[in-house]
Length: 195
Image 1 (tube, rainbow, N blue to C red):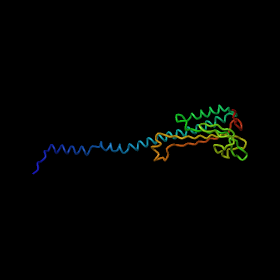
Image 2 (spheres, rainbow, N blue to C red):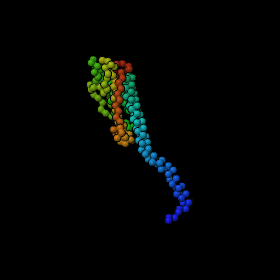
Image 3 (cartoon, rainbow, N blue to C red):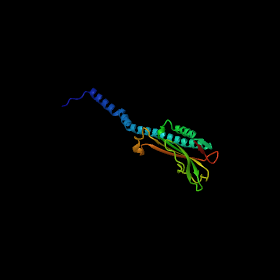
Image 4 (cartoon, rainbow, N blue to C red):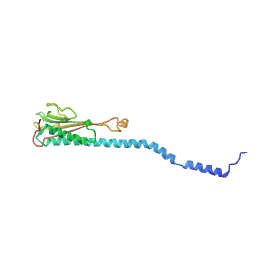
């Protein structure tokens, strides 16, 4: 016949079993392990989207500022236009300016309302030559024969620290922007450039 277990040993085993079954600290660790990667992806996505939206806003500011400034004088010196473009490009900071390209063109509108470049300046790219097509499509609703238009096109590529991490979700390794702006000269119907 087997020996009976002493009552104090039975009580001790019962207490250990209750503690083991009632202990939830392991469940918290498992929940943390399951939720942590999701939280990291959400954080990365929030930071990534925040940067993308900030750059989009800055690109709108670059094109609008440049177009508006050039429209405010009837005659510009080439050095002044170059300085204005460089100043407008600095709006993108603290993001890298080497990925920014700007094309500024003053375009002639002919009797058929077609736009061709009269003069152009650029940042991080080659300026369009006289007679080239406008870098921005000029809608016929705003085009007036014999009246020049100021056309600005800016492009930017943003690569964020999380771009490659989120590539499987977004399908992109970088964000690509192309912003356009058109403006009519404010002082007279044309804007001339002096070298």
